[in-house]
Length: 453
Image (cartoon, rainbow, N blue to C red; front, side, top):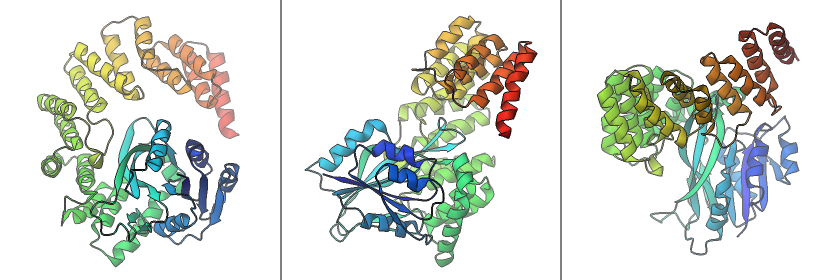
């Protein structure tokens, strides 16, 4: 079977190449619908041999998405955005899905792992998005934003017409840098506001508006919308668990912990396998200094395991996150041996969890481990020491006032010849503390010169 990639884009020169590179060897055609790019997006699309069409933006993602479907000529359609990336090890799964002769379904979800915040190694949120559609079956998108798939006439009367494929996509569009550059919040909120004017009781759009306000840090206003969405709650709704979790999140930030605990009980009543609720409870017990209850709750998260795919929200709520919380609690009560074991487990599960690197290094210092032992232990978590990892290790040892070792790792980071301004800054800082003021200034001047260029 053949596969068309269908995308809608606008000013995506910073992300498009990564996306196309991830699927170039499994798709038979690339359909790119441009809605008004003024940067190098079109040039990149042409580099990959994409078929480019232009669409005048009308504030409807569904309309633009459906236009892209109309241009696809292959057996199956793969839906992606420019800030998506297919997980490399899942390419074979894609080919198996579209070539399976026993495959009776015409559309499939894939799991989207969305990075948020300032970097792609901490907050990872899970969502299900339509990714695969069999061409010519009449499937269309509906809704101006957060568009939903509608079955064609052949599938409209079927009880089950959508499947879930064990295929993962990384999404970088909600990293702070991208959101701010593209002003996504304003765009999204304008579209949602228009929909709510026409249908003020649309629970899904009320929820989406709450999510947008939460992302802006306006938690009280977010709760106003979320509570309206929750007014006539139906647990069978696909976003039901996420709605309650978002309400808990907002109340948690506002330190309304009793409300959080009430919502957690309600959430577990509706969705007893959603580990995220228990993880929130563990953290609230920790904040309230109820360490015994927090430990019990964190261990329960581990025993519950990862929630079913339909209920997933934050990655690691049954693995490295509760272990990290247990490490903090044990450290707080002075049990450094147990704390060390928990942090070690965190880093075996997720070596990119940099907070745990700092924590375990502190514990190792408290346990009077030799510096060379600490170095070897920290390096053991990484398959290779790239620039980012070397700079991380340099910061770890600078916090222990081991500026000679910190400088050693900064020098190693420099050899990668990437993001040199950051390297010069750290080298200058460590050289200053080592008393080499002349060379420290030379590095810091390079930072200043680079930032002014």
